[in-house]
Length: 481
Image (tube, rainbow, N blue to C red; front, top):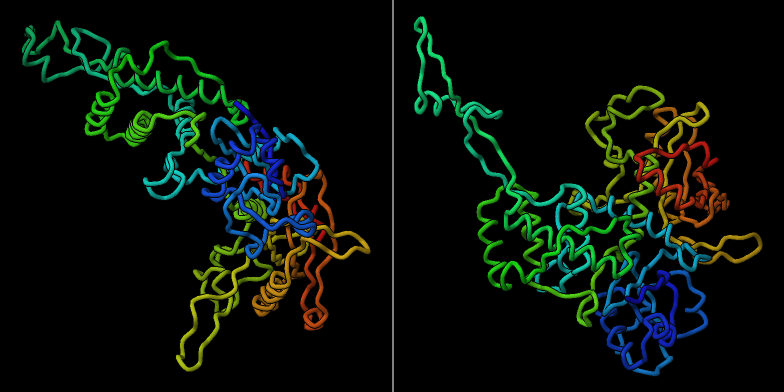
């Protein structure tokens, strides 16, 4: 199994992709087409400007076919996570890791973050799109089978057996009706008690089948060198082969029947996943197999992380907020902070539009004894901000103006509740180990209205991930806003 690292949004030539995939152009072209088909690889026009760009703009993407030997286009991975295609494991790490070549530790932590980010979804992503007509996602199935085994153990079926004078629950009806009774002073005494004991059937068909499938899943992930990346140990539960359980149709028939008798949610999910694995039996080496674990939208993951560690309070009712002074009259205590933002009124209708400004996150907290109202915007950018150099890769003008408008929309609430300070700040990830102060974004015409300029802080991604995974909040003082 070929295993390679690639960086999100780095521009690769066709020759470089052939080197990564370790195959000739003739064999690489179908793989590049498949990666493009699933939206994890994009093509852009080859130019010096593109080679130096840190982000991918929608207008730069070209919808073209892939031809051997052409150098007219560069290829960009728009994915963070793991891609497996035709026996090749592509480990896609985030774009802010500029100096890393093989960031195994960083990607291992990012996978933990993605698992937590997706943990509310009680589904197995068996297919690479929302419908079952999509490509089978073998990697997701293998990972689920192993993770479920580590959390819940082997699939078991229990059966009840009746014992005489056993250690289990006494079955009084059965004891009274079916055993000999002794009477003494008009009191009944039972020499033999009928008891019920629940035992696990170690030879149960589905227990053995589950052990076989989990063992197979472990071997596939071990061959792909993915067990270590997902922090799993190898599992060897049985020497039985899938053929020992009957032909494919018989196994699927048995699973269907078992599904009809099981009402435990976990067991149903395991049975359905085993069914899909056996029904669509494939290999990570298959040319037609493309499996994914990760996301095309790591910017949303970064926003979620920042909202979590910065204690976002946009959806908190006003009556619960810790304000410098009690909530003023005229404010509904049940109303949320985000609902204070004004919506545009279209006068001819006499009605307001539904859409309005939506900040990423707002934090109300005490910093150095002062109550601060902090408006954050989590930006997944590779901004190059150095003294005397024209900024590149920075948030655009629309992001800057929105931040000023967010403050303006809360100005009345801030003044009425005596906040000591209001702060505005962009949060960007960095591979470095220290929080970096990158100055401010300023527009004089808006600063002259008394609005705060927008501070820029580069946050060590590893620090943010550790806080997110442990459920802790960031100390606002270290941001030095």
